Image (cartoon, rainbow, N blue to C red):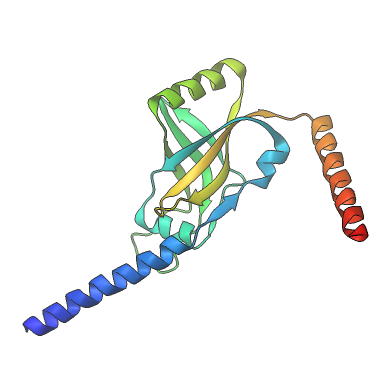
Amino acid sequence: MQFFLYFYLWHLIFFQFCFTFAVMIKSVNILNKRARFDYEIIDTYTAGIVLAGTEIKSIRLGKANITESFCEFSGMELFAINTYIEEYSFGNQFNHKSRSERKLLLNKKELKTLHKSVQAKGLTIVPLKLFTNEKGLAKLQIGLCKGKKNYDKRESLKEQDTKRDLDRIKKAYN
């Protein structure tokens, strides 16, 4: 009986080590390209996210979207709203909701400066990038942003086109 117990424990430890090692190697970067087009980014912060167990598994699989999300204060806490994290395919009845409010973890000093700037200057907070760090924890890079006008968007499109044309010309001559 003891042999089976030791064998079972050894398998648990071995597979746990293999799974965590495989997860640590893969890094996840989910970008919000629309935010860089629609907003002028003034300042960036890196925040932790409070997640359920199946949410982090879905993020590690790369099944998340932050294009339509934004951040909002509730009291002195910051929440990411409308962030889409797909339900985990191997989850059971304890699976998470795909769209829900997720609390962001920042220092008190950072929260105060963000809160003041959002209230006073009329700026907004937008998620820019969802990624995992070297420890395997999910982080959200948020930006303090100011909305662009239509002519600003057209100028940024012109700059992208000219840069693309110059790159093509350089590639043709090399």
